Image 1 (cartoon, rainbow, N blue to C red):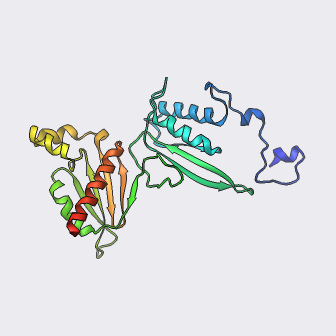
Image 2: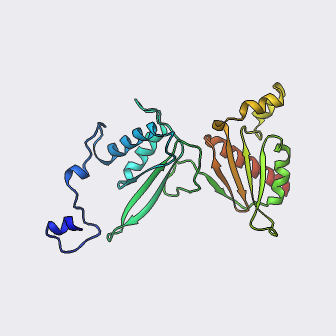
Image 3: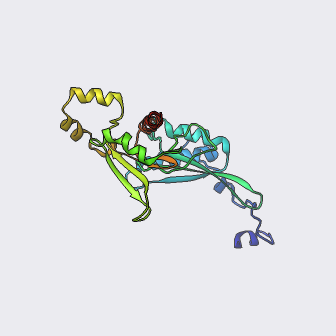
Length: 236
C-alpha cells in the first residue's frame, strides 16, 4: 500500500500492476523468457527437492502456457529428468477486473488429489463418477481379496457401507497377473510386489471410483474398467 501511495496513487486498484521490470520479467538460467521460463525453472528446482516436499505449485497468468508446462512436466527433461504424471490445474478469478489465473500444482509422490481438471484435457483423471451398488461390489472383489486389502468404511455405527477402500501392490484383476500367477509361486509373487512404488489405493463410493495413491495411471484406468464391466454383468 505504501509503495503505490509514494508513487502518487490515491487508492488501491485491484487490477493495478506496480511491479518493476525486474519483478515482472524473468531473466534466469532458462533460455525461455517470461512466465514460461520462470515456471519451468521452478519445475527443475522442484525435482531436486522431491524427497522432502510433497506438493509444489505456481500461479500461471497465461492460459497458453498451461499446455506447455504440462508437456514439460510430462517429459524426461535435459538436464533434469523431472517426469511426473501427478499434476493438476485449477482456474480461479481474482481482482476487480475478474482476471483469470490458473494454479498449476504437481508432485513426485503417489498421493492423488480428487480433482476433475475440467478445463484442460490430457491431464490424468483421478476419479470417475458413476452409480455403484456397494453390496454388489463385494461379490466382484471376493476373488481378489487374496491379493488386496479391502476395508469397508461407515458414516456411523448404524449406517450401511459408505465406501470401500482397496489397497494393493499388483493389478490382480488383470489377465497378465493371472498368467504370471500360474508361472510363479503365489507367496513369492506377493513378497516381491510389496514395495511402495507398486502400491495403489482406490476408494469406491456409491457415486464414484477415486484414485487416492499410486504412480501408474493405467492401473487406475484398468481397475475402473474391470469394476464397471463386472457390475454390468451382475445386473444382467
